[in-house]
Length: 187
Image 1 (cartoon, rainbow, N blue to C red):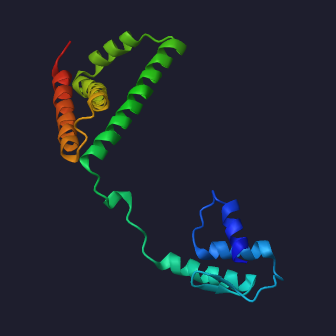
Image 2 (image 1 turned 90 degrees about the vertical axis):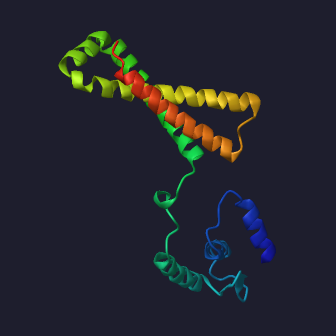
Image 3 (image 1 turned 135 degrees about the vertical axis):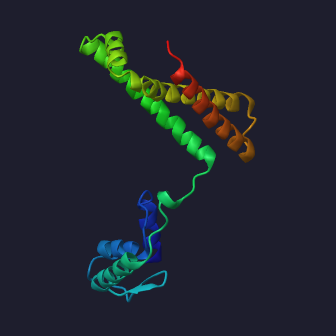
C-alpha cells in the first residue's frame, strides 16, 4: 500500500495535497470501498474505510473553520523598496491606460484633443494644477524608477538593503517635488 501511495503522489505531482486527509480520501477512493487492507496510516491519521475518512474530514473542516486566519496584507508592513516597486508598476499601468485611452479617442472618435485641453483650461482653471499633477507624477516616477533599474542592471551596485531604501526614498521625494514644481508652472 505504501508503494501504491508513492506512485499516486508521483503521478499527481502537480496537485498540492492540502492535508493528509485529502491524500487518504483520494487513496480510499482509488482503492474502492471493499479494499482488502486492515487500515490506512497517513501521518497521525488512521483510517479504516471511506465512511471513516469522510467523518474525519468533516471534523477537521470544523476545526479549520474555528482556528485563526493567517495575517492579511493589510496588517503587514511592506518595506519601502517593495512599496517603491509596486508604485512603479502601478504608474506604468496608469500611463499605458492613459496613453491608450487618449490615442484611441483621437483615432476612433475623431476628437480634437488640443481643443478639449483648451476647453478644460477655460472652464475649470482651478483644476489645472491638479490635472498636471495627475499626469506629471506617474510620468516622472516611472521614468526615474526605470533609470534606477537601468543603473542597477548595468552596475550591480546599490542592491543592498540600505542603498535600496535610500534610493527608494530619493525616488519618491524627488518625484513628488518635481511633480509639484511642474504642476505649478504655467505653459
